[in-house]
Image (cartoon, rainbow, N blue to C red; front, top):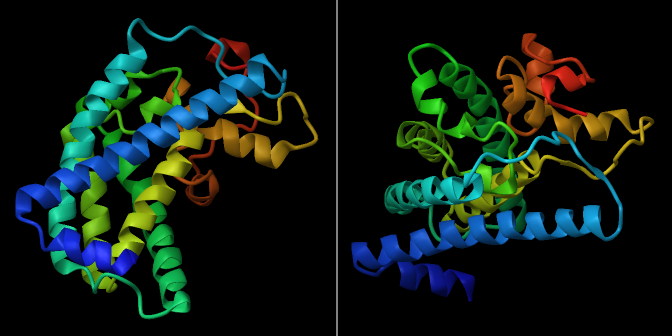
Length: 247
């Protein structure tokens, strides 16, 4: 069924393919960002479970600004999807094991390149573009796609380069986009579900590492966690004081 839907999609005129791709991108973004906002907000207000990491108020109209930039990001991602569909290795992977391998290798590849591209975005040549994303000093789940078009293109070139190196099916490309967005929404949620449970140091650090980056901007460049920061010496201290805007 999925294969038939994908076949019908890629046989549409280019404009139709773009519109569907945009709908997929924005649908994933809205569902995950909105879902995390509702769930984490409910956990905090009604269940008294967890804690906000950075307690400063949002900027004026911050979420609206994040959504507007994200609409542009989704449109650019949809444009790259047109290219990805042309170089994809079929609609579906050959087997479950092949699909799992494609997704696992793609996530590792993207995670590694994203660490280095993020460091590049903090150099003086690209910092002005990355400033759009860092407008959200106190991040929200809506922040994840809030990017300048230059940064968006850099992110998508990493996906396209992988598909040129490792034959990847369309289904796995879409699943990868969901996984990347899911992780990004958690990383930008500014919510620690473990609250003040200091004995859960490792999971707490995972939830807090990217908010520290938004607050300070000088360390914690990783995408899926602080592991590459630990390897390359850019990891921030496990705890941050109130002077840095963090609890």
